[in-house]
Length: 330
Image (tube, rainbow, N blue to C red; front, side):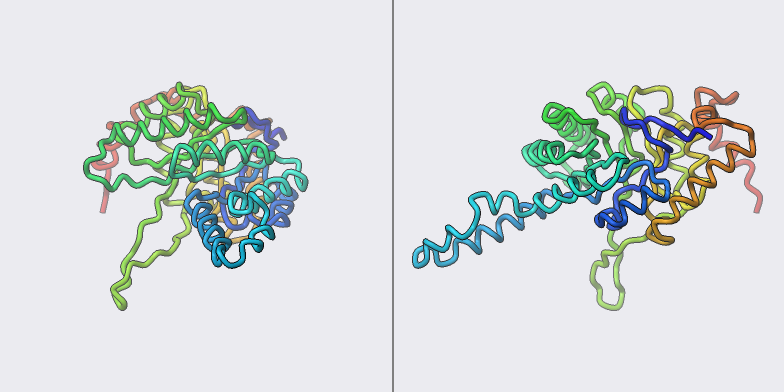
């Protein structure tokens, strides 16, 4: 059974990728993920503002009493502040690259063009096989137009592509006014792939304390339909790879994503629920499903049910909406 796929120009032994999560911070877990069948791992995001905050704290600490104890400054390496935050992340990349044979993809969440490019370069130098740009940006300013938001994404992509030679994936949210048009624009600008979709974590309200509550709800299979729709619409229309994320709990979600055209399928919530060994359950299930249908490879099913290949392409569009509404039975 050939589960081989291509993602961001990388050859993967299967479509299954362990997406960015706290699990992937530990080298031991990354080894186990490879042993259980993960074809690649995405490391947890490195956040520019956290790095800058840590650097500022170190600079403040090392400057205390400088007038009285100037000689004490010599105890700190000259670049201590600059490398304080990134150094741990870069070391994780190096250790992961030495520990496993599968691709190690870094995840970067920046706030400035300088931050995006600077940290992309050092991530590449540390040995990452690719970079996933996690642009978690909520356009809260009412004066910021939709085009302004899109331009920000384009500028980040172009800056990073000029800074590095490794593949760059864009992790996008589903809230653009014309997703297909924007993905095609990013594709033309050089994006090597797209991860659909980034989940924005919105606050809730604790009614007992009347405080904003920031917690994390793991995704469920019910959330698969939105990325399923857009991957099915985009498959075959762009040059870059398509990775599905959100809602992957069982092998059923993996197969559905592949059928609409995903090159790779990512999961986090299922691994947090069931442990890293769950990736083997997904890999074995995929192989068994293909074997039961006498299908020899993943390539043979990929995109079989994307919009361009099904007999009724309108099923992805307005006609599907009308049929669903009219067909509802209480």
